[in-house]
Length: 170
Image 1: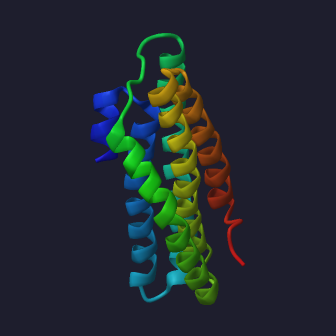
Image 2: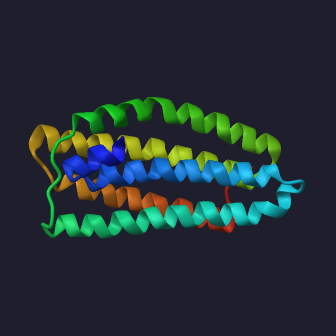
């Protein structure tokens, strides 16, 4: 839904937020794959690499599109759907991340904790996205959208690096 709303509004930040949601699903699937085998610890490094690469891919896309938007190739329009999605996500994602992180620590699993960080990233994205969407809607500051998207990209790179190195656990 966020990708569709972002495409309709030409909002790089909203599309990035939607892609992050898709990446969250992929990250959760990677953790599920890890624990589906007889030796989850043997699969953990691969799972962490998958999570790290997903962050890097998100950052790359958002950076390219943000730079294009800042150089006038597109202007984001306001999106009521985006504002509602960001606000709801801002309320729901911190709770979900906390539950995931506790479960990951209890299991002693770096990949499960990394997955909780992906969900926490969604919380940050929601807050930043909401600010950008509101600045654009209320004041017509279309440039706030790509600036917000670049913040999303920077956070994604940081989280990707941590997942790649396996630095999330306990």
